[in-house]
Length: 476
Image (cartoon, rainbow, N blue to C red; front, top):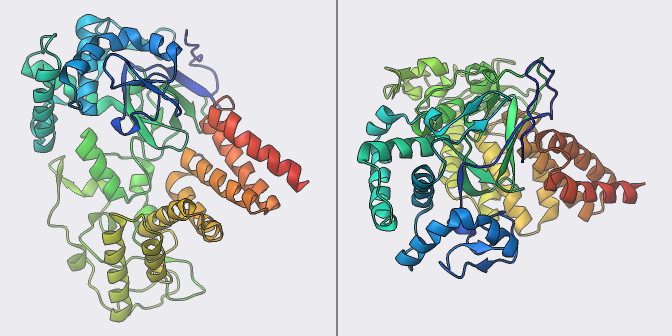
């Protein structure tokens, strides 16, 4: 399908699609094996490939469509069976095959009528990889798997292979389904031109394995140097976001949100003891540099964390801690309760799937953590999903109401996850016959998803619109 590119001088409106692309290579996650088609990625009834007995297809059409890329892999998968090849090894093997046997080195992925990117344009971060013990261990394990898996193909030398590995891990996109769950990994050459920001002006969504990048803000014209998407989950502290970016992509973000003092104040904030005051109060509770330093001050020598930063020493825990808005003092007892609540929540966030654990954490947080405290928001998110799983609709509605402001604060007003939250909440309300409120939530979902996904996307057309239509008819 020939891509239609936007005129770089034309005005960009929120919801406009600025790039659509098919993957250079992709792999369906092994956890989706036997659940989704390896070609179209649709969930449903699938049948095993008769050759390798490993990949699955929803029908002959998809099997035929995939055969050119699957043919070489089919024989190799059959030879190593019953061993299961790790997803990363399969991905790297597909890259090697495409470069050595296909048109990989000459393939051009256009992002405008005249501009394109090729495999060689991707950054490998070779020096950073060499200094990264964890990544080097991963690379070594993949090399051993590839040596056995690709016996019909000569492996590149160690330096070249590490360059391929670096380009793969740095430039991979996580394939997401309609519920924003990870279902695989892909590399898109043209889309790799888009840089990261924690305050993005565009969003990447997926229709099967097709990536669509859409603007979420109005822009006077299309300038690829200014287009930003988020590489990571944004419902984290600036310190955590910087850490993740540095560890996975070897750079630090300097966007407005990372510099915003309001973010630094809210993320680990305590609720003011004055019931009339909604202010967030900063109380030291652990060595988290994000609370006392601006992002650019939290690193030494470019990439090294300042391990000496200790919040407890930096901000003494005594009754000098007051609300900056109303002046209410926090006693040692109040500070101790806050610290223990934060520590308890942090511990249980590691594995928070049980409804009772979620509810207990939220009960401890009540009146202690600020409503926009990131740990409170993450607990609400886990609790909402857990309640849906056990069909406790009344409580799920209560948590959805409290979660919406958190999503708006951390993700912004036009994010797919906020749209999905409104959609899920609206569906529950529709089921409970709270029709007017359901209609309101579904309209909020429609406004966001039309921008982030477009009105042709299955999420919008096949899932949201029928619910919205039902709510409109039944509430009239």
